[in-house]
Amino acid sequence: MQTFVVCLINESDQQALALDKRVNRAQAGMGRKLRIALSKGRIFDETMPLFEAAGVSPIEDPEKSRKLILSSTEPDVEFLIVRASDVPTYVQHGGADLGVVGKDVLLEHGGDGLLEPIDLQIARCKLMVAGFPETDLNSRRRFRVATKFTECARRHFAQHGRQVEIIKLYGSMELAPLVGLSDLIVDVVDTGSTLKANGLVPLEHISDITSRLIVNRASMKIQHSRISEILDRISMAVRC
Ligand code: ATP
Ligand code: PRP
Image (cartoon, rainbow, N blue to C red; front, top):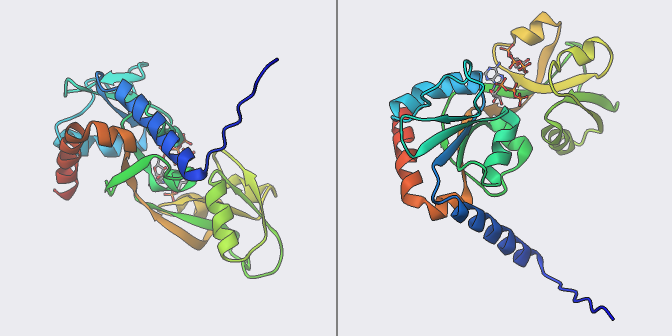
């Protein structure tokens, strides 16, 4: 006869277990190089001057190499090249110890297991609701909203007590209202030229956005002096 043991654990036990798992994974990574996750393109281009000033930068150009792990000028640090929206996932699960990510992506992902010690003040933009100029956001209709920031959009419209249908897209959000897929979009806006070129206008501000340096919570505990030293150098570069 088989015997089953049922174990009931409460929420704080579950959180402690999750932290334990993360600490174990981070401890497993103690002997290896410190890993910094970055995305190619805008984040990489704007982060590099800061990292170079801090004395830690990749020795290969990710635009020219197909490698996804790049050695750096600092012998015990390497860079991981990942998609912008995947940076928090890598850092949260200990695949990387540190990462650089837009606050928009962070708001969408949530901060579980992550510390956000430095605002790098780069890739500055705003997360906004946009649509056709004649749109009355206060009308009682149920708007269709196209966005890749589905959680941010859901939260924003719920806070304003507005009923919406969210349509998930992965890019070119500005196209959706033009072809009748949605009434509104939620996307990042910088100069406003993409909206303007497509006959749209910003309608409502959701959040100011800059890129943040994020750190795995368990890595920070276990490799405190090593990570703090790098954070100090990057903070200094941001202030200069
Ligand atoms: P993914 O490939 O995961 O969809 P992405 O294409 O949005 O990511 P990027 O365009 O490189 O990645 O943007 C990275 C970050 O830069 C964004 O998360 C945002 O914080 C910021 N950003 C995006 N567009 C602009 C812009 N036009 N001006 C300034 N900052 C921007
Ligand atoms: C971003 C964003 C907007 C545009 C806003 O697109 O999705 O389309 O920038 O910038 P603007 O206000 O200065 O026009 P991006 O250029 O990153 O293209 P992608 O999202 O397709 O990668």
